[in-house]
Length: 372
Image 1 (spheres, rainbow, N blue to C red):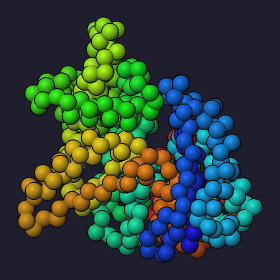
Image 2 (cartoon, rainbow, N blue to C red; image 1 turned 90 degrees about the horizontal axis):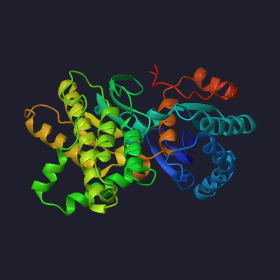
Image 3 (cartoon, rainbow, N blue to C red; image 1 turned 180 degrees about the vertical axis):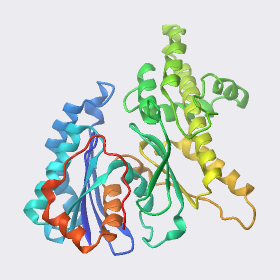
């Protein structure tokens, strides 16, 4: 089965074609048209501009993807598209394109929740029948979401905790803007924080690391809060002189201090969840999962936890998506669609083909359980 998948939830026009052999997914083509250059001067994504670019890019990106895969529309068995959540003007373009193709080509159309797609990026190449992966805990960290999600099986979600205000990725972008760094802020802060660690002693690093608070670090739940941390950075910068804030070393120091505070909270909450629920698998999902410091700290934490378990206990394996699939992409949407479609009965599959126009974008679509 060949699946054409489309993702336009934010500022990337992404299209992919994957092959599903009944057991696992293989990527045949993956195309992403980025809008970073367009939105950089605004310091963030402008929904109206993003929608306009999606409209201009969607057909060329689809055509390029078919060319890469050496396939035609006759080879496509299923069309998948991000249904939500995301920016409504952006979602409309992707969903409209998918509905049009499904109607004209007479193909089934399935809508996929964006965060679900990020989680399933970790299932690329995994066998559908591998139940040894469950229970599974996912740390979702993106521009719009920060959540800890427990899965007992495929498409069964329990949200253990989530952010009460800003998402981690949103905080990275806002702090980067305060520091005069380009959009998107996450990769730039990660790079500068790494430069700081490489050029300072352990004592100097430790001193700077203490600079900012760790919101909700010790709270008796799995929730997050990053708005106060962002405000702490703002107040700290107001105390500095304009000349100091132009200094590269100073900016790198601030990046390290801020990133360590975020990572400390994410790691602490994750460690608490793993300790309580003892999952067989832990995965990270969302754009911030590409952060090298977060991956490093999570890996170290998991290694420590696995060393502490008894010899007869099962250890928790750590899966991370390739960096290219950490950011928004259509491959993840296709993988989630393959796993979900495989579990549908014939009547459900027929409905997808008969009613493609019933699919509508939903900017606030939550993670939803799927019974099979």
